[in-house]
Image 1 (tube, one colour):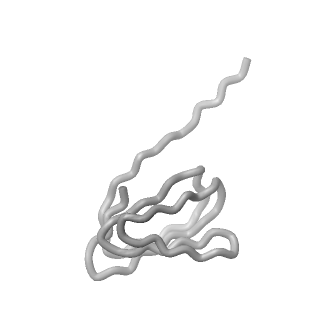
Image 2 (cartoon, one colour):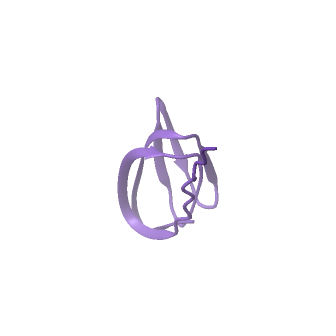
Image 3 (spheres, rainbow, N blue to C red):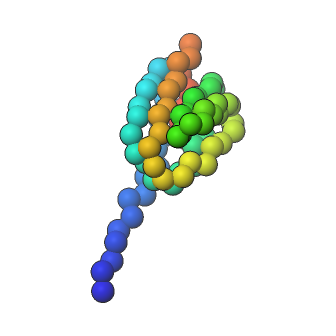
Length: 73
C-alpha cells in the first residue's frame, strides 16, 4: 500500500509590500489591514480587509503594495 503525505501549511505574516508567483495547493487566503491582489489563470481577484479567497491548486501570483503592513492570516 502506498501512502502520500500532504503538506499542510498555516502562514501568518505581515508586510506592506510583497510579490510571489508559483504553484500552491488548495488554500483559503484571508487578510486584514489592507488589500491583496491575486492572479489565477485569466482571473484577477482583490481580497480586502476581513474577506477571503478560496484558491484551487495550481499556479498563481500574489502582490501587496500598501502604505501599512497587511496581515496574512
